[in-house]
Every structure is written in structure tokens, then in C-alpha cells.
Length: 160
Ligand SMILES: Nc1nc(=O)c(N)c(NC[C@H](O)[C@H](O)[C@H](O)COP(=O)(O)O)[nH]1
Ligand SMILES: [Zn+2]
Image 1 (tube, rainbow, N blue to C red):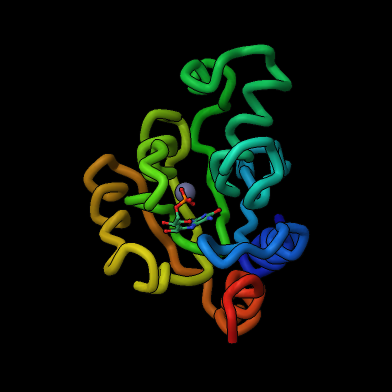
Image 2 (cartoon, rainbow, N blue to C red):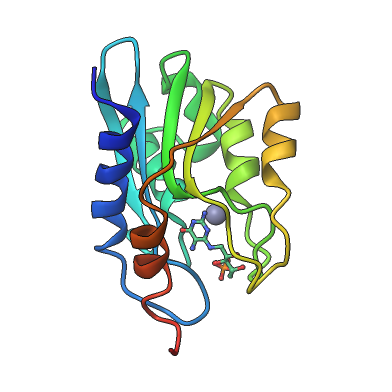
């Protein structure tokens, strides 16, 4: 099976496709089915129209593939799926849009979140999303080793 490092590397390569902006981060995400060792969806920030997040694009693209609304994603997700995201899921968005923590919890079958870095405190202060994910029975696993590259890509649109 692919290593967590190789899947996080894949998520980072997706993040590099995100158009840099000063008001968010360029993030990449991969939905992985450990039962079949298949990547079932990918996403990066702003990939889909609107102010979309990487994890949100992962989920919405899979829903589109199955012709279901995002709210019914649990019906088309295999059990025990994992999401790899270069930055931990947002728990508060300055835009007020639904957070990725809430989207992941609503998906029900995403049982593990692998994250490359914690969210910096620049926009929303401390991101307490991991506690909320764990309370929902979702395991959060930090994949070490790519922090510098992930943050360099994530903040490409921020003035130096
Ligand atoms: N995990 C994660 N994936 C993303 O694709 C992304 N862009 C962020 N970014 C988190 C950051 O906190 C929000 O981008 C700002 O709070 C602005 O909020 P909007 O993005 O405009 O809703 N975090
Ligand atoms: Zn988000």
C-alpha cells in the first residue's frame, strides 16, 4: 500500500495547482480508500468554482461523479475512508462558509484525517478543529516531513 508520506506528497502536488491568494491558503487533499488502496478523489483550493477549499472540492467532486448532492455523500462513500490534507481542515472560515471539519463529519464514512501541518493562526487564531473531529470519532494523524514545503506552497499568495 502507498505510504502516508507518498499520499501527503500527492496532496502537496495538488496544492501546487491552487491559484495563490492573500486571503486563504493553497491546500491539496486526497480521499483514499485503504480497503482497496485507491485514491477515490482529489482536490485543491479553488479547484471548483466559488471560494472552495481543497477538502470541500474532494468531497464535491466525488458527489458530482455519483450524481448526488454533497449532503448525500455518505451514501456513495465506502466505509472507513481516509482524507489526506496538506493543512488541517478549517474549523472557522472568515467567509462564514461551511467548514471542512463540518463537511468531513457530515460525510460519516471519513474515519481518519491525515494532516501535513496545523493551520497557522494568521486568519482565525488557533484552529481547534482536531478536537471536534476526534469527538466525532475521527482519528487525526500528523504526517511529518513536508511542513516547510507545505507552508511555502500554502502561503504563496501572501505578501513576503
Ligand atoms: N484546510 C484548509 N483548506 C483550504 O483549502 C483552505 N483555503 C484553508 N484555509 C483556511 C483559512 O482559515 C481560510 O481560508 C480563511 O479563514 C478565509 O476563509 P475563506 O477561505 O475565504 O472561506 N484551509
Ligand atoms: Zn476548509
